[in-house]
Image 1: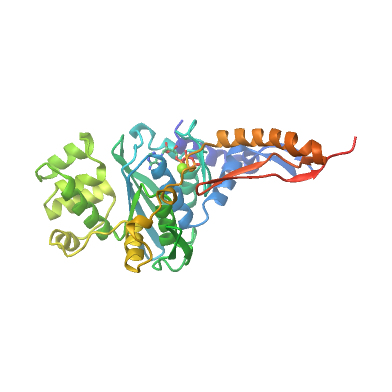
Image 2 (image 1 turned 120 degrees about the vertical axis):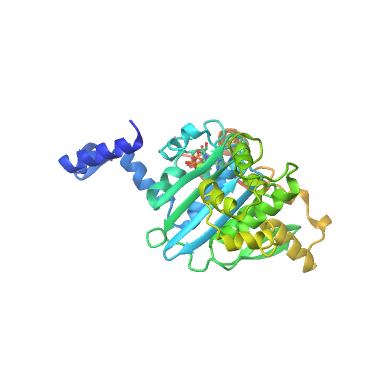
Length: 372
Ligand SMILES: Nc1ncnc2c1ncn2[C@@H]1O[C@H](COP(=O)(O)OP(=O)(O)OP(=O)(O)O)[C@@H](O)[C@H]1O
Ligand SMILES: [Mg+2]
């Protein structure tokens, strides 16, 4: 049964018997119940996605885990609606799974779950939570090894965003590393922090017209094939090996490109702006991290040789949770052997092990050993 049919059936049952029996698995008495797993998931979804910034983080993490090199984030607001299209060039989603990835617990990360600064990633819950909390989310296109295009439409009255979405965070350079020091916790900050933490991924952020200008101009430098019309575009978009974002560079006709953008990229760019892009009047964006490196270079804060490669890459970022758990076990044994017996101390709980940039931290919470 498809998830739509299941929803319909649930609504029908709810109408007949009320929603209480659908929400609980077991009535334990005295007001205690065991929630049905789907009800617990719905409640968790509310907690996981509380604002537009949370959505952007989840989409960026997905693109990163898909092994992309570039992420294009086109965003604009129309009255209360925030519309964001994210285009990456990662491993893609097989078409038969487009609908299923929005169902709870659907993941391809069974053996590759990671913990990053935002928490555990690999629960198969983020897209489900996004879908539950916003007006619309769709996979516009995705193709294996060519990338994914996801578009979200958020009613900011129901799922809010920071008011100020134009201020970029203030950064400083410390030990050859660019760090965010302050600024509103808005989408530009989320993107900047993500871009700084992932130097191997280029993140471009702007209006749909700016994103188009960037994809178009970058692809012009990369493409060797001659420009053509819709047929050449479709051949490449659907069956070729070019990343999805580069295929825009194959089209030279303004009207054809406008249509293609809506149908295949979910991007709405006016004919006038496409003309301006073709005439070089709308410039390409620089990726967020490179823009900051250039800015700090101009300020005289860093020279290229200052950028310490160890600070550029987070060496511990892909260590998996089960390996950290293993380290915790070994640390527990070592604690008992080295200190516990000698000082009559025991551990309140297993040692906590977590990752920070280029560091693994372990903390031991100790208590007095119980007297026999
Ligand atoms: N941009 C993307 N590129 C490729 N695959 C993607 C992309 N976004 C989502 N997916 C696929 O959809 C699946 C579900 O995504 P979702 O974010 O819901 O869960 P998850 O990333 O597995 O775990 P979590 O809930 O912790 O985020 C992913 O496991 C991945 O296979
Ligand atoms: Mg995810």
